[in-house]
Image (cartoon, rainbow, N blue to C red; front, top):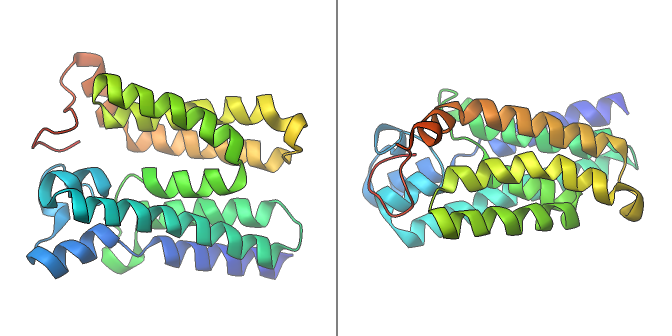
Length: 205
Protein backbone atom coordinates (compact mmCIF):
# COMPACT_ATOMS: atom_id res chain seq x y z
CA UNK A 1 0.00 0.00 0.00
CA UNK A 2 2.90 2.36 0.74
CA UNK A 3 4.15 2.36 -2.84
CA UNK A 4 0.64 2.69 -4.26
CA UNK A 5 -0.02 5.63 -1.96
CA UNK A 6 3.23 7.36 -2.88
CA UNK A 7 2.70 6.86 -6.62
CA UNK A 8 -0.91 8.07 -6.39
CA UNK A 9 0.10 11.20 -4.48
CA UNK A 10 2.87 12.02 -6.96
CA UNK A 11 0.63 11.49 -9.99
CA UNK A 12 -2.18 13.46 -8.35
CA UNK A 13 0.10 16.38 -7.58
CA UNK A 14 1.68 16.45 -11.05
CA UNK A 15 -1.76 16.24 -12.67
CA UNK A 16 -3.11 18.99 -10.44
CA UNK A 17 -0.11 21.16 -11.31
CA UNK A 18 -1.29 21.52 -14.91
CA UNK A 19 -2.65 25.08 -14.85
CA UNK A 20 -5.22 25.24 -17.62
CA UNK A 21 -6.08 28.90 -17.00
CA UNK A 22 -2.41 29.81 -17.47
CA UNK A 23 -2.03 27.62 -20.57
CA UNK A 24 -5.23 28.84 -22.21
CA UNK A 25 -4.33 32.47 -21.44
CA UNK A 26 -0.92 32.02 -23.05
CA UNK A 27 -2.35 30.22 -26.06
CA UNK A 28 -5.30 32.52 -26.79
CA UNK A 29 -4.24 35.98 -25.69
CA UNK A 30 -0.50 35.65 -24.97
CA UNK A 31 -1.11 36.75 -21.38
CA UNK A 32 -0.25 35.48 -17.91
CA UNK A 33 -3.55 35.18 -16.04
CA UNK A 34 -1.63 35.43 -12.76
CA UNK A 35 -0.69 39.05 -13.50
CA UNK A 36 -4.23 40.19 -14.28
CA UNK A 37 -7.44 40.64 -12.35
CA UNK A 38 -7.15 38.90 -8.99
CA UNK A 39 -3.96 37.14 -10.04
CA UNK A 40 -5.72 33.86 -9.38
CA UNK A 41 -5.17 31.05 -11.89
CA UNK A 42 -8.70 29.74 -11.91
CA UNK A 43 -12.03 29.77 -13.71
CA UNK A 44 -13.47 32.90 -12.06
CA UNK A 45 -10.52 35.10 -12.97
CA UNK A 46 -10.48 33.52 -16.44
CA UNK A 47 -14.11 34.57 -16.85
CA UNK A 48 -13.30 38.16 -15.98
CA UNK A 49 -10.21 38.37 -18.17
CA UNK A 50 -10.99 36.09 -21.14
CA UNK A 51 -14.74 35.54 -21.16
CA UNK A 52 -17.19 32.66 -20.88
CA UNK A 53 -15.73 30.19 -23.39
CA UNK A 54 -12.25 29.97 -21.88
CA UNK A 55 -13.70 30.08 -18.37
CA UNK A 56 -15.97 27.09 -19.02
CA UNK A 57 -13.04 25.20 -20.51
CA UNK A 58 -10.89 25.94 -17.46
CA UNK A 59 -13.70 24.96 -15.09
CA UNK A 60 -14.32 21.61 -16.79
CA UNK A 61 -10.63 20.75 -17.13
CA UNK A 62 -9.86 21.69 -13.52
CA UNK A 63 -12.75 19.52 -12.32
CA UNK A 64 -11.48 16.66 -14.49
CA UNK A 65 -8.04 16.90 -12.84
CA UNK A 66 -9.63 16.07 -9.52
CA UNK A 67 -11.77 13.27 -10.92
CA UNK A 68 -8.87 11.58 -12.71
CA UNK A 69 -6.57 11.86 -9.69
CA UNK A 70 -9.14 10.14 -7.46
CA UNK A 71 -9.76 7.33 -9.95
CA UNK A 72 -6.04 6.71 -10.29
CA UNK A 73 -5.99 6.36 -6.51
CA UNK A 74 -8.95 3.98 -6.61
CA UNK A 75 -7.23 1.87 -9.25
CA UNK A 76 -3.88 1.75 -7.43
CA UNK A 77 -5.29 1.64 -3.90
CA UNK A 78 -7.01 -1.72 -4.17
CA UNK A 79 -9.74 -0.83 -1.72
CA UNK A 80 -7.71 1.33 0.67
CA UNK A 81 -9.70 4.55 1.09
CA UNK A 82 -6.65 6.62 2.00
CA UNK A 83 -5.12 6.24 -1.45
CA UNK A 84 -7.83 7.96 -3.55
CA UNK A 85 -8.46 10.49 -0.77
CA UNK A 86 -4.82 11.59 -0.60
CA UNK A 87 -4.40 11.41 -4.38
CA UNK A 88 -7.30 13.85 -4.66
CA UNK A 89 -5.84 16.11 -1.99
CA UNK A 90 -2.52 16.06 -3.85
CA UNK A 91 -4.29 17.22 -7.02
CA UNK A 92 -5.77 20.18 -5.13
CA UNK A 93 -2.36 21.03 -3.69
CA UNK A 94 -0.89 20.79 -7.18
CA UNK A 95 -3.47 23.22 -8.53
CA UNK A 96 -2.78 25.67 -5.70
CA UNK A 97 1.01 25.33 -5.85
CA UNK A 98 1.91 23.96 -9.32
CA UNK A 99 5.46 22.76 -9.74
CA UNK A 100 5.45 23.63 -13.46
CA UNK A 101 4.57 27.30 -12.92
CA UNK A 102 6.69 28.49 -10.02
CA UNK A 103 4.21 27.23 -7.41
CA UNK A 104 1.82 30.08 -8.29
CA UNK A 105 -1.61 28.64 -8.94
CA UNK A 106 -5.23 29.11 -8.00
CA UNK A 107 -7.45 28.44 -5.01
CA UNK A 108 -8.45 24.94 -6.02
CA UNK A 109 -12.24 25.35 -6.02
CA UNK A 110 -12.97 23.50 -9.27
CA UNK A 111 -10.44 20.72 -8.59
CA UNK A 112 -11.93 20.37 -5.10
CA UNK A 113 -15.36 19.89 -6.67
CA UNK A 114 -13.98 17.12 -8.88
CA UNK A 115 -12.30 15.35 -5.98
CA UNK A 116 -15.16 15.55 -3.50
CA UNK A 117 -17.91 14.79 -6.01
CA UNK A 118 -16.05 11.66 -7.11
CA UNK A 119 -15.59 10.40 -3.56
CA UNK A 120 -18.89 11.48 -1.96
CA UNK A 121 -21.32 12.36 -4.74
CA UNK A 122 -24.58 12.78 -2.80
CA UNK A 123 -23.09 14.95 -0.03
CA UNK A 124 -21.28 17.00 -2.70
CA UNK A 125 -24.51 17.50 -4.66
CA UNK A 126 -26.36 18.55 -1.51
CA UNK A 127 -23.71 21.07 -0.55
CA UNK A 128 -23.35 22.11 -4.19
CA UNK A 129 -27.02 23.02 -4.57
CA UNK A 130 -26.80 25.32 -1.56
CA UNK A 131 -23.54 26.81 -2.86
CA UNK A 132 -24.99 27.47 -6.31
CA UNK A 133 -28.11 29.08 -4.83
CA UNK A 134 -25.90 31.38 -2.77
CA UNK A 135 -23.99 32.42 -5.90
CA UNK A 136 -27.23 33.06 -7.82
CA UNK A 137 -28.68 35.12 -4.97
CA UNK A 138 -25.56 37.07 -3.96
CA UNK A 139 -23.27 36.81 -7.04
CA UNK A 140 -20.39 36.03 -4.70
CA UNK A 141 -18.49 33.09 -6.19
CA UNK A 142 -16.17 32.97 -3.19
CA UNK A 143 -19.13 32.60 -0.83
CA UNK A 144 -20.41 29.66 -2.85
CA UNK A 145 -16.98 28.02 -2.81
CA UNK A 146 -16.70 28.48 0.95
CA UNK A 147 -20.19 27.14 1.62
CA UNK A 148 -19.43 24.08 -0.51
CA UNK A 149 -16.30 23.11 1.42
CA UNK A 150 -17.79 23.96 4.82
CA UNK A 151 -21.00 22.01 4.25
CA UNK A 152 -19.42 18.95 2.61
CA UNK A 153 -17.97 17.47 5.84
CA UNK A 154 -21.37 17.90 7.50
CA UNK A 155 -23.34 16.37 4.64
CA UNK A 156 -20.82 13.53 4.31
CA UNK A 157 -21.25 12.77 8.00
CA UNK A 158 -25.04 12.88 7.68
CA UNK A 159 -25.02 10.45 4.72
CA UNK A 160 -22.12 8.38 6.00
CA UNK A 161 -24.02 5.36 7.28
CA UNK A 162 -26.60 5.34 4.50
CA UNK A 163 -23.98 5.28 1.72
CA UNK A 164 -21.26 3.47 3.70
CA UNK A 165 -18.64 6.19 3.23
CA UNK A 166 -15.33 5.38 4.95
CA UNK A 167 -14.18 7.66 7.77
CA UNK A 168 -11.15 8.60 5.67
CA UNK A 169 -13.45 10.63 3.42
CA UNK A 170 -14.64 12.66 6.40
CA UNK A 171 -11.02 13.45 7.23
CA UNK A 172 -10.41 14.48 3.62
CA UNK A 173 -13.38 16.84 3.48
CA UNK A 174 -12.27 18.45 6.75
CA UNK A 175 -8.71 18.89 5.46
CA UNK A 176 -9.98 20.38 2.20
CA UNK A 177 -12.29 22.74 4.10
CA UNK A 178 -9.41 24.04 6.23
CA UNK A 179 -7.19 24.43 3.17
CA UNK A 180 -9.88 26.30 1.26
CA UNK A 181 -10.63 28.60 4.18
CA UNK A 182 -6.97 29.53 4.33
CA UNK A 183 -6.70 30.08 0.56
CA UNK A 184 -9.83 32.24 0.64
CA UNK A 185 -8.79 34.26 3.70
CA UNK A 186 -8.67 37.53 1.75
CA UNK A 187 -12.09 36.81 0.28
CA UNK A 188 -13.44 36.17 3.76
CA UNK A 189 -12.15 39.55 4.93
CA UNK A 190 -13.77 41.27 1.94
CA UNK A 191 -17.06 39.43 2.49
CA UNK A 192 -17.04 40.54 6.12
CA UNK A 193 -16.47 44.18 5.13
CA UNK A 194 -18.83 44.13 2.13
CA UNK A 195 -16.07 44.84 -0.37
CA UNK A 196 -15.94 41.44 -2.09
CA UNK A 197 -16.28 41.59 -5.88
CA UNK A 198 -19.38 40.06 -7.40
CA UNK A 199 -19.71 37.80 -10.41
CA UNK A 200 -19.73 39.94 -13.52
CA UNK A 201 -17.46 42.63 -12.14
CA UNK A 202 -14.13 43.24 -13.84
CA UNK A 203 -12.10 43.15 -10.65
CA UNK A 204 -10.54 39.98 -9.27
CA UNK A 205 -11.73 37.68 -6.53
